[in-house]
Image (cartoon, rainbow, N blue to C red; front, side):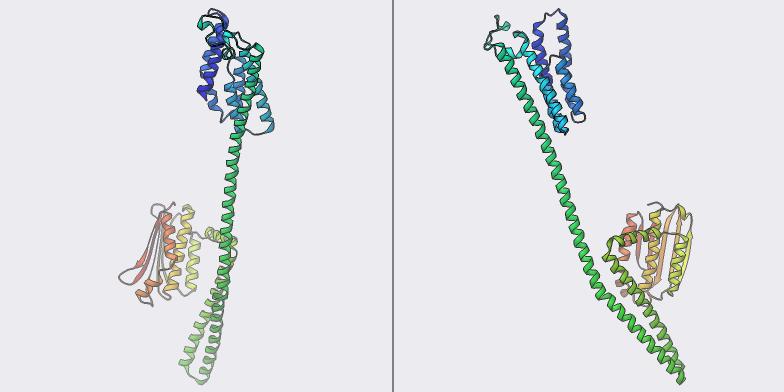
Amino acid sequence: MVVCASFACLAQVSFASQQYAQDSAPYLWMIACVLVAIPSGLILLARNSYPQAVFWTACLLVVALPYDSLIALMALTSLLARRQGTKVTLRSVLAAATTTIWSQVRDALHPAEASIWHAIFSKPYTGVRYGNTMVMLVDERTIIASAVVVALIAVAIATLAGLHIRSRALARVAEAKAQSANEQVSRLRTTLDNQQLADAIAAEAHDTLAHSLSLLALNASALQAESRKLKAEAEQLGNANVAGMAGKIAGTTEDIRRQASGALDEAHSVIDMLRHPEDARLQLAANDAEASLTRDSLLQLFGDARAANMRIDTWIDVQQLGQLDESIGVIAYHVVQEGLTNVRRHAPGAPVSLQVDANPPQGVHVHVSNPTMPQSPSHMADTRKGAGLPGLAKRIQQAGGTCQYGFDQHNVFHLDVRLPWVG
């Protein structure tokens, strides 16, 4: 486009210069126009960012200088392809038509030797370069009329080309929007299917798990009542051993009943999360925001664990926790929480050793260990293959830390986690 536009400008100014003597002022003006025509096509390189400025500059060059209108027509196509609006389209087409007609009629009004249109309609082998006078095959009115008609056809072609390019671009945009809408519909359909599955799981859990936990709590209450009755009868008969055993059974069944009731509440909470995923997401985010490695949160964890009859031996050395990365603090808190939960779940009654070190130079170090009581090591190895520790280990690795867990030669289970001070 740049080469063709510059060449068309050079061709018309070269023909126009033939009517002037080489030592005249108009001829010097033509030389200046040639120098400007050489780089004139470069303005088309800015048509993407400034289509209107390029178009009006091209029109100004064609009107003010003896240039061909091809550069203005190219700029018109670029403008129509990149700008919408009825006013912009009509104004630019009208300006391009006026400029093109002016350029072609101006050339047709030049003397025969200085006009491209006269050269087109001249008799072959006539003219100054053949040593004779140029002979025209048609009259002047036909030449001018032909220039006007060709100018209008050229404007129509440039206009249609610009509108076609614009329509293809709009079609691509519409296609992209339709594809995006289809993807959105697909995501919504997947979300709906997932929610329906979650509702089905919640209904099944409510019908089975919640019912079983309710029966467990009910049976524990019945056993507790029978054990208390047995204790009262044994005391009346003076049998202290039976009374003591019955009292222990009553206490144990009370723990079972309380734990079953708590598990039932937790089951209902999980079922509500499945049925209301948005609320669950906000709740889990809030829990993550509240769970952080602070002295108060650690004391709360230890207090809850000791209230559940866990024996904990702690070694806590934490410094500058206020400067700890928030995300690292949340992960470290969950490490301690998961360690204590695993002991209570897989080795109830076993003593726990817990060490927490945190300082900027060394980062965060958490170590939890407990003997495999009362189950055997092989059974413990099987029960430890849950989703809690592997999921926690993956989260720790993503934060740039390390997580190791397993049994040593003395059948003691260890959970050792190291985290950087900054994630």
